[in-house]
Length: 332
Ligand code: SD4
Image (cartoon, rainbow, N blue to C red; front, top):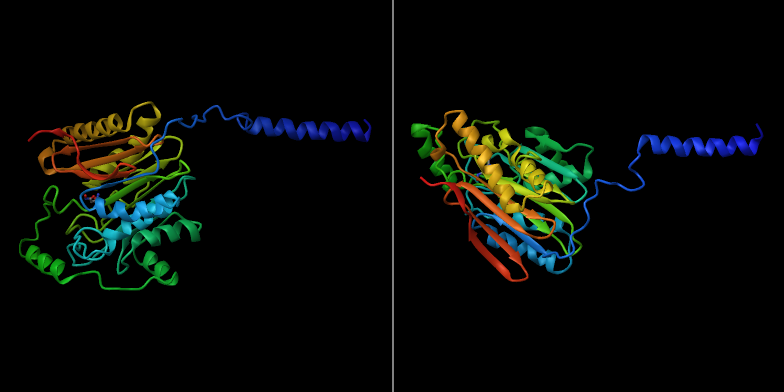
């Protein structure tokens, strides 16, 4: 065999091997075509405090900023607000009086970062983003998360405000863990944004269930449970009893239902019904449990649904910033 022929076959061999390894590389048949008509930019977030958070996110989006920057800026508003008793600074503590924070973030390229049980840092979402961008890992917890945050220049602060401390001391008198639906558990800000470039990102941050066991982790910092984003399909986030959301990998479920053709609204409804079914199967009382899902499709369509009345969400798009009441599954 002459050299020319050998090198020709060698080249051919390499090419063939490449095709054998990834036959779909040339044209990925799983690619979902980009939608033609898109409502963008848009940002949506959970609960009434979503309105203020959306304002900060919109500042980024309207100036052609990225969805990732928008969601980080947005959720930092309730994180930094001591009057919001369920997120970041001023959040209700666990049963030991410690404010432990959970947060995660996900961008259009499936980059993810998360922290759980993080103490003393006002903006856990920014630590989650630093985990995503500056470490080879996706999740840091407890002391390790704190050490990492300090190494990145975050300041150590006392997050337990006098109001939260007073309430906690009251709670200690009976020490019963019975979260009040829509109050002690209306904790979490989940936010999803679609930017001018058609890219999606999401963020989720909370102090978790008030008076939880020290070390308890909810759904909010768990990618797939409290937040999920697939840039071809849409994103979803959740609020409420994290244990129920983890059980169903709720936000991932919503996104996968959208991939199968459900609208964001239909997907949220189906995910809530799955949770309600599991509650019944486990013979728990649905009246003690709240879960709400919020979803945003690649086209900029919004969906929201919850177990029982009381969940609200805010939507900011070209028509303005509006608060909505979510429809719900169970009438009590
Ligand atoms: C948690 N899902 O820690 C959070 C709490 C929450 O609305 O969202 N409440 O389980």
